[in-house]
Length: 302
Image (cartoon, helix red, strand yellow):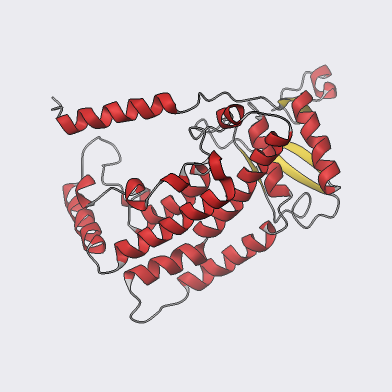
């Protein structure tokens, strides 16, 4: 039986109050994927491969061509499984030979075949028009090789975290995703959407900075051993491996009490929040947050 405390009650009340303040998620479709007429006539049942934009989707494709001089192709994304299929996800591959960032004639983005959303189409279009994305992806691969292939003698935990964040990709991903999110905001504003409508199309509680920030957040988790690689539940039961859990808590406690580590982590978080606020303005709460409001966890939380 769970024991409710005054602190638990206060946190729950605050959570519900914040939920009510957030704009209701109200996604807008960008069209649909259908099987080509020839396949339908022959009775061939394959996953839909032909994108049929609705009026809003068609308008964006036309605007993209006018802006960039490039045709934007929309293809069905590879189904990653039941957890994401139908969620409105999408992606863009800057390294692709055809439709990638070096293609002189076209770009290709991939949308959820079951649920192609306008927000996702514009977001991926933001990546597709980003002139710095290809170089950033190359820098990430190079930086990852350098980080894992280089041992820095007497490197402090804080300095190692800084090097990890800057070289392996988290900060670069935050920047590139912020470019795409800002592209969405700017485009929708140019089409006369209100702030409320723009926020309602963002699935992360209407905050356009939350998704970019997940890359830095997940990097902290990875560096601190908080993730699937340190799962402490048994694979076939809802029970804890207590010995592994104890080792994990000891390691995390040692890291948190290492001089300089928490200060460096908070400095990195502050830089990321400042970047988001500077680029997304009123469409993110990043400027109102402090690192300790995001990272309030301690070893005792685990």
